[in-house]
Amino acid sequence: MVLSTAKMQKVRLLFYYQDRDNVIKFLHEKGVIDVRQSSVALERDLPPDRLAVLSDLLAKVNGAIALLPARKGKRAIKKTRRLPVDRLIKRVGSLRYIDAIFEADERLRDLDEERKALDHVISIATMFENTGIDFSHLKSNTLSFSAFTAGRREADAISRSLEGRENIEVIKREVGKNLFLFFIAHKKSEDIDEVLAGHSINELDLAAKGLSGTPHDAISEAKRKMKMDEGMSAELRKKLASIAEGKRDEILGFKEMLEIEVERASLSSEFKKTDKTFVMEGWVPAKDYENFSIEITKFTSGRCYLEKIQDDELAPTLYTRPKFFRSFDYLMDFFSTPRSDEIDPTWIFIISFPIFYGLMVSDVGYGIVSFLLATWFTTFTDPEGLVYNTSKVWQIAAFSAIFFGIISNQYFGLQLGGIFKSMQLFDWMRDINTVLVVTLLFGVAQVVLGLVLGFVNKLKRRETRLAFGRLFSIGVVFAGAVAVSGFLFNSFDPTTTLYSGIAALAMLVIAAVLSGIEATELTNLITHPLSYTRIMGFGLASIIIAFLIDSAFTPTLAYGILPFIGLLLAFIALHLFNMLLAIFEGIVQGARLNFVEFFSKFYEGGGVKFKPFAFKKKYIE
Image 1 (tube, helix red, strand yellow):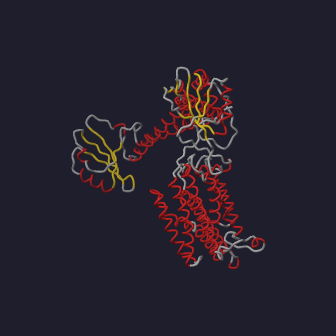
Image 2: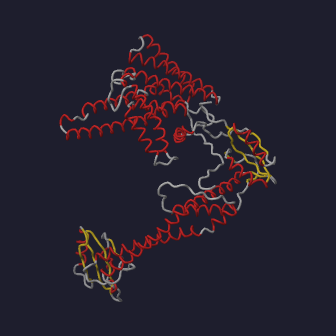
Image 3: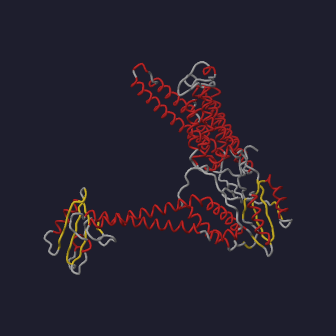
């Protein structure tokens, strides 16, 4: 069915100990079963000992990859030949360039710490320039030396505290805006901490490594070492770049191999076992069951027993749509994955969202720019990320904006004549009532469809009382729509309007009684269809703003070149702002009308996505 996910079948496999590795390999390469731990009351199997070794090697390889500089540009992938697991462990464990990556990174971190220490030495020594102090002489059996910086207000207070103190020599100098340096020499018996207590100061480390000789000597030596360190850092980065250039694809190939072997070794923990056999369970697409049964029986020469089983576990969700619509599936998963036992509304979302977006943008120029912007976003974003998939949906919706722009004759807010006028089916400025009625019909139709789907879902789960509550809710929407239209727009005579209102209230009471705890949703039966008028509101707002921009800022040379340039810049900027506003509202409101007004009538979500035991090869043959 179009409005359902793929039908799934739960299966149980039994196979002998000696076939374990081969069966796991077959399942992994076939990629058709979503493995579950068996519910039978047997002892669980333990993963093989090599899992710990494989996991450690994988962590090591991932760490090395993270330390390599990013790849520049796109290049053809050099694939690595697949290795058996024992040879893989031995090969990765002996890769010297992996160790070289970690050694280079550790040395780079050491050099970075040393650079920070040298910067610290330079900052301290700079404060003491032209003071005549030699840091090498700051060692004495009878004297102690300290230095610190303080703000102007604190410096004045400290100076007053030190005045008249015997056995204390102080050098005070301004070293920055409202910042003062204090250098104090005092007898060891003198309690200098008592003087400084309660003051906000930044103490300087006069014993810092490298702080020796005169300030000039210390600065010169620190800069010399920094230059040497910069050379060493450059050599180490060059070495990492060389490894990345020559070995990146090979490392990524080993990573893929290790990931495959880790997944295979980890699968054993899902098995139950007897004295001679293993038992495992999982879900396969129902359409693949027969072929899967034939292939695994043939692969194990009949030593594997496969059977269908039935239980109350919720089957995983598998979409059956063409790959072209994968981004809509991504957005559905981002919102909430459909349950396998409920109606999948994604096809309705695929149809309705572009229509809503197209009506709210409704301009050929804005639609073309929408498509170009969406395409640009897809060129540099992650194909597995939200921005990329939203942009792919946006691309499709942009064609709808172009279509509605053509039939409403809107080209950056301008209405064109000739052939363009002949294709115009409605005028936003003159047919407001028509657009209002159309959007209300959209609202009634989609809300009623949601209630019908809710009725079907409740019947499938044998919730008969709630199902019939949905039927009366449908009556509330129809009767309420007639009553509201008659009362607000005089669409019906007073008698029809009155009786429709009475019927809507009566069916609302019945629906509330049948719906029980879900009765709180009934308050939305009238307001949700009315929410669809926002399509008209945002669409008309965009058209009016574009019209005003064209009326006031269309550039002309009649007033000279400078006014022309000013008007042109204002024209482009204002249209850009209006377009971005229309695009934003089209995306947000188009999604809202589906996810809130429509889905709330039937959609539960919270499904578990089908994740077959499978792998993808990119860097290995």
